[in-house]
Image (cartoon, rainbow over all chains, first blue to last red; front, top):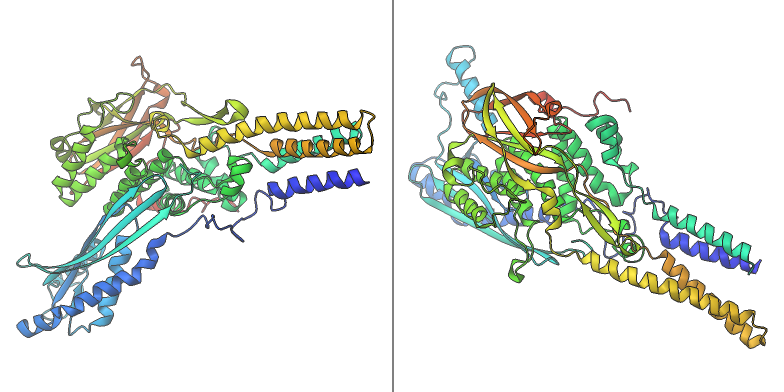
Length: 207
Length: 423
């Protein structure tokens, strides 16, 4: 009986240590050990979104671009957002940061202070088709609004990164910049930047 | 302790160890041979049916199979999900891997496998006209293939992501950026095992002249087996295939031979040493020593117990036997076998064909040849649709065997692979 208990104890140890109790097909996402993170970590960059947007929008506000333009031309400047440039090693970064900044700016400024032109290629195609139909008399139009908005400024996002690794750590410094370019003179009216550094440790057993 | 109970205990223990090892990994190669890419798409529908530690590998398989069937949008989602795990995750099951099988840890891929994941994701973004995210993926593909340059470790030398980054730079109108990358390529050792140095598209002029880029994959990539002491050495084996080169025809006219720009086996064997290999070697040594020590202690213990000595001798014998059994058990439990999981769906080689084609619809044909220049007629792929835009690049990704289907419409690209399958 005693021997049987000892063998049972040993087998119990083997089973527990080998993870039989949890089963190979069961999730290990619960009660993770300190050195383990969920396998679908969305990465550190989503947390940077608010920080970058707030910082750039604040910087832009300080420049009083809208007030100065209105004082000079008596109308709100029209801003066209053009394709962002992603020089980081992270996909799906540029679009969301640009969209978030746009949302923030449209929230901070009224249409009398700042106007935006939508330049996405699919929208441009749809607008051109609509315009053609209006000109052909197939659709009604608003008098004096036959032309598309001509932008006073381009808003362009650029994301660059310095990525290093020593095999143990991956070190990324990402510079998020947004620039406002005068469409008539190519003058760089404003360039706001925000830098974020992320260092992630790679587990020693991963090569 | 009689011999029968000891034997049955050890047998039970061995059975438990086999069970606890849970060593079976989804055999994508067998599935492919059985039912083609569709088989993999069907088998991998429910990701939770696979051990969590294998899910990233299986996710790559599923993404690859979807891409091969032309379900580009769905494939991109899977590749991106895998990308996030392989690039942002720290992995898991690490502590178990130190003592038990290395397979206990979550699969994250070797550098060349991570590079391929980023590369395919980039190609899908590129095909979707999302050049900026494609650019990021190609950059990451190069990054994960690079060691610590300050210590003089290996630099990335797999050309496909370099050349696709060149296309992205040119798409931006940035010739300086394109030239910088081409200069980087031209500084690499001209190693024919890695790429064909005669490739005519490694200079700015020919890149600027082209508007069509075709990536042609040949053969099977490497696979791993466990060898050496207690299987602690991970052996990298070259996949077997007959195709050696490809010739491309557009609208019936030969464009000539495509040039090798990547060799997956070469990429797999030319990395810096793996940290895990050192741990495995240590485990193998400890295992051998433990088995010998445990067995010897058990023998001494048994001799003491049956020596006819006094109570003290018998007690000492029992303790020695117990300690020996514990050491033996621990050594048997210790699994030094190397992790042989690897992406078995990757191709053996990547070849490049570039051209300047008039905008509009074209039909592409690819013929494959063996090392002696004989055509492998059963692999000939005809009627591949290619649309060259007015501005920017057309891209194509094909494979000799098993072939990829190239979607002929946006509806096909966006199709749900499981839409017509029963639950």
